[in-house]
Image (cartoon, rainbow, N blue to C red; front, side, top):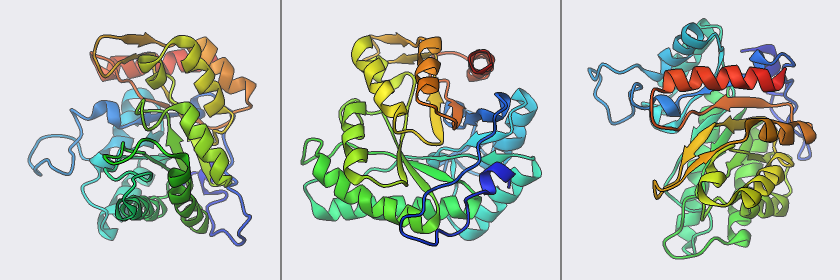
Length: 298
């Protein structure tokens, strides 16, 4: 494991302990590559062993060779299993490549704010399972999603109650829990800020995504939301240059200089994960994002 990631990864000894990751200062070392943009090339849990696609354990070496970047952010759908042997094999492969995992982007189906308490419990259990996986592979954090509930509108109280349990579990395992502005209904940045402030845990933070809110709302709303998210961010953010709205009728163009400026204003020292999510070649798109990120961090 890389020194800056191993620092602070020992078991938390006190209830008021806080994460203490040591972040690198060099611009290139602050960049990670998300596996999500490469979903057409990486085998998922539903793919057969002879699909011809890359296995997740190969991803760290692959991006190191392609982009000269050593840190990765795997997506939960690319994990074949959460069995101990599989996770140990993944961790060993990343280490062999000289790489590190900076976050797991986790997508589930159960809503932490559902009116049905059983569904909320399922959401909590799901997040805890991935926190255990993070420990096994040496990831300092997870991004857990907040799916829309079928029986309730977004509810700060229920969401905070559920995520308080998740954050407490993360604290016990020394794993940070992050929330991303993604789904425009259930993961609106203003809603997430309220939830994080309500929980008030050193282990629950924001994951600002550069483009998601811009694809759903107007610029003023989106950038104020991103500003609020960076005020609560700790170790991970998603860099995008464009994002296509769910209705496919809007293509958001990110002002990279402005967004990196917001991060700097808040003293954000964590990682920037490249998450190219536009039509076209993700390899060329990711290479372009890296170049522009390096320019903005220099």
